[in-house]
Length: 460
Image (tube, rainbow, N blue to C red; front, top):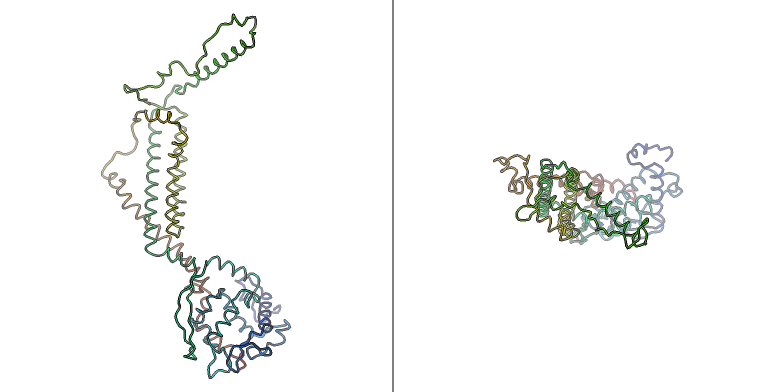
């Protein structure tokens, strides 16, 4: 492996594997087959345990001693390792049906080979089982790969796969089992037309909910821009400060009276003053009301305006953030119940301020707010014309524009996210797919050529 006469390092340059690691794996794999006597002895055409023969051909001493691996033995080891990509022993039936072991099945003209399909199944399971050939032969990273593959593919599900007939023996039939995996079924369901239509409806409802929030933000921004600003002291800050100072002086004098001394005064001669009020006396005049007693607001203070501006900025940031994150949250949900519950949870986010208002604001303050007459101001929003009535109407946005945008989003999600995920899972779990590198090692033609190339292993 250090001399690397076959220039193996060049072929492994894109894999991150060192020739020494491959060499040690090949030595270990072939030696394990020797030690455990898992042999395809086949002068009699049967799968059996043999002590002195390995597939009809003994393992050379230079392999047993870890000195070198002849090229033909390395090719034999490569085929067994290629089978390790299947990972799951449940797939052995499908592999037999795909013709992986057809080339090793015994027939009249072949000196060696597997006796029947059950022997092929036993060999496949022995190679792929936990602590089997693959786990003992390949580096520890393979066990990590096996675990991650099981997590990514999900739980296996089984169904009838039909009968498979031994091409060399028509009486040898095998009942196969079709294996599928939970994550693959989930993404296959996500690509179905029914699920995409349901997803489209949820997205439209979500965007209509966002439209209501955006409309309120626009109206609030228009209000703060056009509503008059008071130049005086609408909060009576100076009067309230003076009232608090007066009340503090009164409390201090009362405390001194109780102690029985205030300068040279005797307590019985101390004048009793009425407790001063914090609010100004003309408070009723500071709150204008109409003839019905409703509060009339004709202007707002600068601090009030600054607060509303902050609210507009924060709510605008939140609505755009929620539009992006909420849409992604919905698009990446691949279950009918979860999709419905997540949509309800997102809608609840915009209802939360109303619940907090009802919970935290006292009924007296709510009654006062309800008694305020509607605020009137000159709006900067464009007057309604046939264009705005048509293209900005709720009917157009809710029935045409948003459904069109949601259709584009759903189709984009299928192309960009779901389809690549399905291809990746098919490659990982089933070794299939147009861009799957492992697929070439699970074609019947590849295995026919492989078994023909290593036919010497049966002693022929």
